[in-house]
Amino acid sequence: MTEKQLNSIPKSTMLAAWAIALGAIAPMLDSTMINIAIGDLTQYFNVPLNLIQWGVTGYILAMAIAVPFSGWLMDNFDGKNVYIASVLLFGIISLFTGMSNIVSLFILFRVLQGFTAGIITTLMTTLLVKIAGQDKVGRVIAIVSIPMILGPILGPVFGGFIIHFTSWKWIFFINIFIMVIIIPIMIKNLPSFSPFNKGRKLDWFGIANLSLISVTFIYGITKITNNAKLMNKEFIFTLILGILLIAIYIYYNRKKNYQTVLPTNLFKNRNFAASSSGLFLANLAIMGPMIILPLFFQQFKDFNTIGAAIALIPQGIGMLVARPMIGKLTDEYGAKKIIFISLIISLIGSFPLIFITGHTSIIVISIILFIRGIGVGGVLLPLTTSTYVGLKEEQLPQAGITINIVESIGSSFGSAIIATVVATMIKSPFVSSNNIVRAYQVGFLVPVIIFILLFICWNYLYSNKEINQR
Image (cartoon, rainbow, N blue to C red):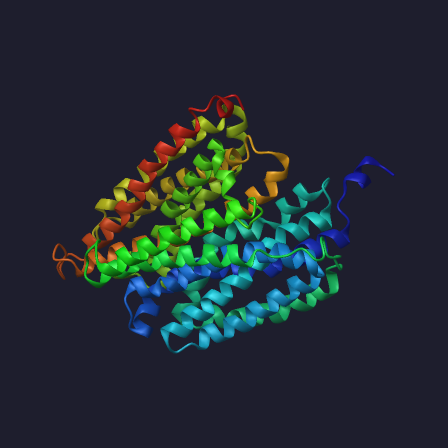
């Protein structure tokens, strides 16, 4: 057998890999398509921005909660059946989401949709590794991940076209048609997978506690809008409750000897604590503005949904341009320099948004978003790499799950905080009906502040000699 034959990827492997990747396309697109529908949703349900943002926040939080569930399902059941069932369930829930006529039902189904999406996206990587094997997994993922990379860029564009020619409901109904096409392909091409560790138990209490902590804090943030005051009774109550739940979780971790879904002893490692805090803040600053950018284009530039979606593309292209270079540059110059430069570029691409108005040229805004995309594209990867430095071998799987949860919670907090800031400013005496754009400008100020805070994490992280030596 020749070396070329040894290195070639079998057709059956690629067919199975593509089947897995296709199953994850709809959940990936749904996580970004909804941003372009925010304006339509607020009008349809006749609710404020800070309430409809739960449709975004709930989806992302549910994805985080699903991460440990997906591992447990793979441990106890055939991975093929779990994956196919999750895709099927995602399609069915999408149907009910689109049929929702009251906002509470819409949010509920979005949460359920996010949960199934979390299982799908988590299982995708695991199944790809199992199918390809350690020697070919890099090449297989590089090929089939192309749609995943383009998803955040194309999602709003697809959503814009769908909403413009039909309605917001069809960004969910279309998942039914995708499911009908993809499921037979998966049934035919996916092999069966034996349970990894049958009998392994799930940390139900830990998952429930983490969910309550996240929901409590986000609920408290959104209640600020009620009277446009930070220190109202509801906010103070939820803050105290959230702190109490955190204390309970820390005590629970110690009692269980840190054998939980999110072991708090990981944060005793200085590198992990600083890097994961940085990832939380980075996701907050990167994903948060995506909830108000489409609204800005629609409200102040008079763009339709297609125009607003296309206006978001430059940021996605910037991230896409930065992605292949970051790994190489990090290896050559070190994560310390790359994160520092990326944060500077992120600030350069975020600070001008504080001053944009309806009269600002779309060309100028596009250049700003492109620069921002390049900057944020260079922040996440080096920070993620740094989280694993100094951890013990047995801590790596737990660290991977924790990072996934931290990033998802950061994204959901970003959406909640920025939506609440804008909704609160609109109600405040500082904003009149003639200068509502000021509320959006304050919303764009939030990621600027977060990027400045990220410099503190960067300084703390790279003042450690162990990190600097790597």
